[in-house]
Length: 194
Ligand SMILES: [Zn+2]
Image (cartoon, rainbow, N blue to C red; front, side, top):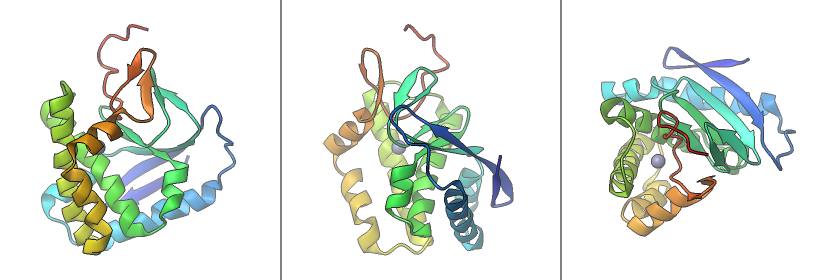
């Protein structure tokens, strides 16, 4: 399997074909996209705290369709925080091919891994919303360090200040049998009751 170096650490890149997915994405193009994003991250000057955060993610798994990870059904990008794997939906990855946008998107979930290391799995909606606001706040700073314009980070500012949008996002595209769940694959350490 391919690995891509980001700030001196190897990140494993894998692929999953989900239910309803085609599995026919151009893997070389996806790996090239990650390499190009990594090159931008590598040539940017980072405060230690962000350099450390980027180093927390061990893997990126591209997928299409609906995949099952640790008992969750996933149809959009999300992060397995304790395994430090970012599940990146191919459609979203290809929607905006700017390295700076991809890099700040990736960073957001690296920051969730930092939060997990600091405080474990989030407990309750209030904590989940707080972590979204926190991750998005740092993501905006990182986006600007990567070269994104204020215009490019405007949607992140709006999202950060809109609690309903955050909750809708957390509840979209990830579910277990009994209903919607947040977008992070965070309950695998607890007993699974399905
Ligand atoms: Zn998040």
